[in-house]
Image 1 (cartoon, rainbow, N blue to C red):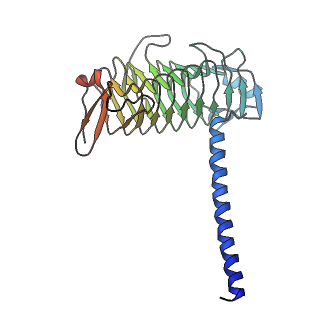
Image 2 (image 1 turned 180 degrees about the vertical axis):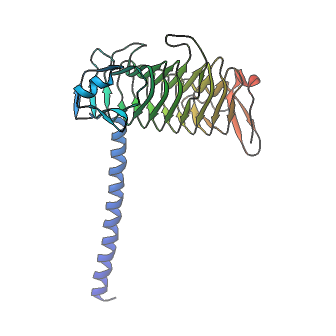
Image 3 (image 1 turned 90 degrees about the vertical axis):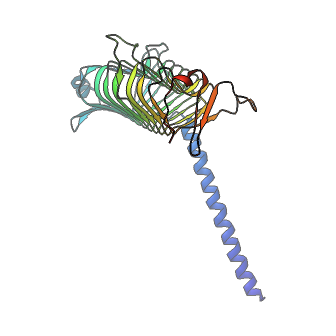
Length: 319
């Protein structure tokens, strides 16, 4: 082989190696950035306030503060950083006007069962979109007596209470949120919380969320009907993946990936449709060759895992 060919081959090989190195290096940077982004609390930057309380008086806030504006028939709170100090973060109360809370960062709100970074009391037609609701001393989001609420694409992590606490409310769409490392449940829906008459909570849709490493159950329902829990990642929560408590019926729990500690899906009443979930025991609690908490029912195409102390009352569709 001539000297010129050797040089050419060396240049080509060197180019290939350098290109591969930079592609891999760039990929490593992207992965590191994504991991950092998931665990870093960013400020929304444009405005910083201690707390916000809108009590049916949207027009006042729209006229008074730059961070509140009216667009296409919807009131907006956007690009606000709230360090709660000794308050709730944002409270919206007594309104049916459509509104959106978007791209806000809320942390350090006050402790307590009734406190939250974002709290709704008797509201309709609200949306919580793309916010960082993390490191609060109470709940991440708390609602009561509210309807037609969308909670989408939020970070709800490291709060001392529940990630989402929905009391006496109907018609929620909860999707594409990251709900991790909260001190109680990831999402709790409870008809007994809040003022007013107790009635069945209906039409909640929870789908495509990551609900992981919360201290109690991933999702906890009580007195609910006609709800869906689908296509969620529910990993390594302290108790059950999904807990359906008393007076729950017609809840569709399907196509979820659940890594559980106490049980995959617990259906107290046995009146819900639980199908096509993929369940795995968390390795941290696994005992080789023995599992006291679960019964496994199987056919050729499907394996369903349920809590053993409720299996006699459940109805399952094995497809």
